[in-house]
Length: 316
Image (cartoon, rainbow, N blue to C red; front, top):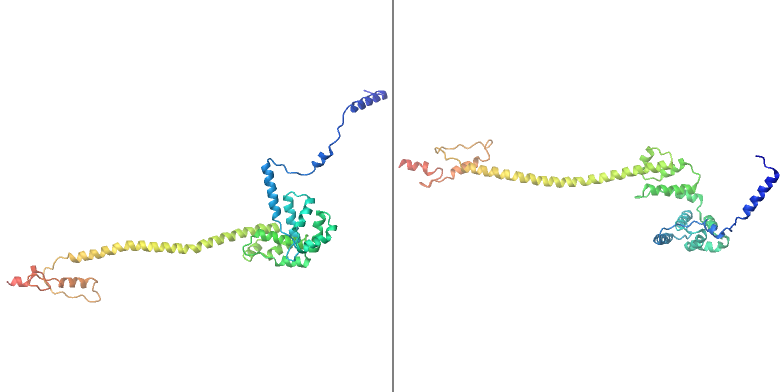
């Protein structure tokens, strides 16, 4: 279908009239500007109160910065930034709040340079310049950082890694592994080197693996040192049981020997006895002889025989 110029002009006029009938409401600038600000959504007033209390407690944990040589301004500033972000503090409020965490020389520095530090962003840049340690100090601190007794591998790893980053943000992985290995505990050092870590992350995984093995071996060795005492008690108890078992047997043997000696039949005739040689004499031979010679005849009152075999009665 071909549209002529007059028809096209008529369609244009109709479209203009249609659009003119639409009412355009002005945009709410205040609403649109507020929508760009992040605000946490709380499902209840209790949750909002809890988050507010948590933010206050986190801010209280911040340490003050005095600017002494023993303090690390970069680490301190990093901790402050993390706590402020968790507490949802806006940059303008960060600038006001940070002034309460400066003391001694750092506070004097801020008061003197406050006119050149109008906001939080400029503060984070300005405070690093006078208090950042020199490259020599950073390298020396990195060299002297060793894993402390009782310190975990993870704690040592991230602390040493941060020192490496401060000394050289572009430090190669090989150099990072070199410095990490240099300060590692002597108990873990040979085992980690033997496994040849290729990256700092490999170093962390290998060192933690060897750390767990070391803990396991220490636990086993501690248990083994207590076992002899345990076995000793068992041996004592076993000896007591053996003695208890042996004791009745010995008593039975002695009672059996006594009964055996007491129930011996009298000799058929009163013959002289020849003593056994001392080399082959039995332990109870003396007892038998002493028992036979101790018999007394009630007829003649002599020893060595009984009345049934008394020679005096046979003569009468």
